[in-house]
Amino acid sequence: MLKKLIVILALVMIVVSCKQDSKRSKADEVSEISTSETAFEDRKIEEALFEGYFVKNPSGYDIALKNNTLYMLKANPSEKDKTTNFFVDVIPKNGSLQNFNLPPSDINLNDSLSKNYNNVAVHKFVLPKVEGEYEIIVGQYDNVGRVWTTTIQSGMLGQDIRNYRNEYAKNIKSTRYLKEFELALGQGYFMMYPEGYDVLVNGNIVYFIKPTNIDVDVDTRFYLHLKFENTEENMVLDFNGREAQIDQRLGSKYKNFTVIRKEVPSEKKIVEVGVGQFNNEGRTWQVVYDLEKMYDNITYIYDNQYKDYIQK
Image 1 (tube, one colour):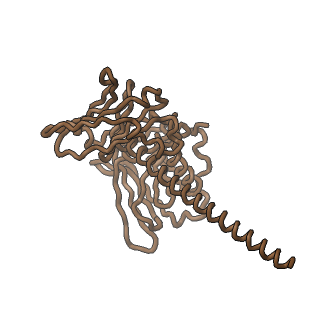
Image 2 (tube, rainbow, N blue to C red; image 1 turned 135 degrees about the vertical axis):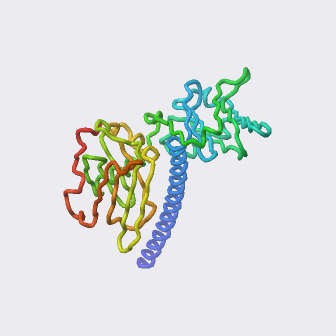
């Protein structure tokens, strides 16, 4: 009888444990999905700020616009800032005005963002597609009239004007690029080069690095010549350094640096990398690194060489 009772108790404990594991598993799945969704929205805002068209507005919300998506942002907003209605006017050069009156609750994005944006009110509006030239007027209005407005010409959007200067660094605690960069410093190939940029290679990401108090040229075009493991395939990339510059995203710790980040569109292992810059007269500097020969060579490991430049 005692043995049967022990067996029954054991079975009950197993069932309870399975149910708890199932609940825990479902909770973990929900948490993972939620984290993934907030990370996605966080990244989209970050891309709009750094890669899109940004307008600073001292009297209202700042505007970030990329891929036809309009973000309205304000750090430490007042209750009036959060509750006053928005409007968006889209005025085609050849066509009819499209007017959108937007209650804040309908376009507020904060519930879909991570806690990095707790101190910033963020509103999102997807613009209608318009053919040809057009004008966008964004603002807020109350019973008296328009509180503030910002006007954007469509012609400005195609000029790759990147005028965001990390105005939200003190309010947005995003560390995605910082973690990736410091991980690369900890485990990548690091090569110092006095005539151009120092180079850091980790996986399929190549960084060009220099402390900013050393004379550096960001505007001359950069290039990468890459060879991969077990293939004759080579890859040649050239790019605009300012478009790939990320030091503003690394926060105050690396404010004394110029950091250019280029992601190589291949998952194959890089075994040789040629780097440099060039203009109409030729290459201004160049160097080739054979990464295979550097394997386990401590000469090409970052060992706090930048300690005098990093802010604590």
